[in-house]
Amino acid sequence: MWIADRWKDYEVLDSSCGEKLERWGRYILLRPDPQVIWDTPKKDKRWKRLNAHYHRSRKGGGEWEFFDLPRQWEIHYRDLTFRLKPFSFKHTGLFPEQAVNWDWFSAKIRDEIAKTGRQVRVLNLFAYTGGATLAAAAAGAAVTHVDASKGMVTWARENAQVSGLSEAPIRWLVDDCVKFVEREIRRGNHYDGIIMDPPSYGRGPKGEIWKIEEKIYPLVCLCEKLLSDHPLFFLINSYTTGLQPAVLSYMLGSALVPGHRGKVESQEIGLPVSANGLVLPCGASGRWER
View 1 (cartoon, one colour):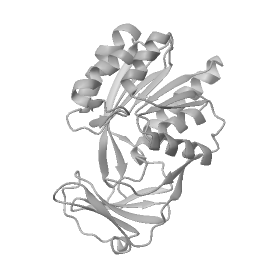
View 2 (cartoon, rainbow, N blue to C red; view 1 turned 45 degrees about the vertical axis):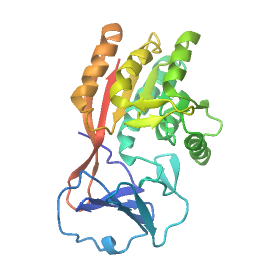
View 3 (cartoon, one colour; view 1 turned 180 degrees about the horizontal axis):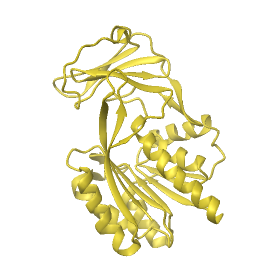
């Protein structure tokens, strides 16, 4: 398992009975997590000193209960700053476990620039609020950030601004990811690194339906055509139960290795739990590297 264990502003304090107790900077949040099927003693006093609690409904969805939480606040990871706010379906605008991937591809970008001096171009698809975009840009890459939600792209740009990356070479695009990739192929554009964090289900800006089981492998094959002559990496993140690490490895291996060689590795990603030393699973990632 790849573990995001270098956070200072974020921490999973404890987990029990379907919920995880988290510290986001100064604030304590309690949110549901379907992985937490154990019933362990809640010894941390912060279980009863919450700033906000997301209650899941038996009918689906849920709602926040606020005690003392600002509408927006910031946390930091290394030199990056993220604006957070509670919004629909328990999210805060950041997936902290992804930091383990940010560190991985940032090192590859920096090494390549140091060795060759060339510009490294990165494509981030389903880019959400820009965690991976900012990490790649901070490492020195020119990044194309694509998401179908105008609100998410606006949020990502705000994160870039507070991270001191307003002038970084980032191209911000509100677009359907598949259609964008198809146009990039026709335009003859290429990238040295590709990142994708596809949803299980979603809709594009014009109502295009995305079902990951049907769309993900054809998209990986399309993206293979966008890789440069000397590509560095390809990263897929999955929070979908059916896309286990072995599935991610097979997809990347069959789509990329025949034309680019390199190696593929996939693992669960996770966050350490302070109360007991366990690691909370948080999806899976598949990595191809040259």
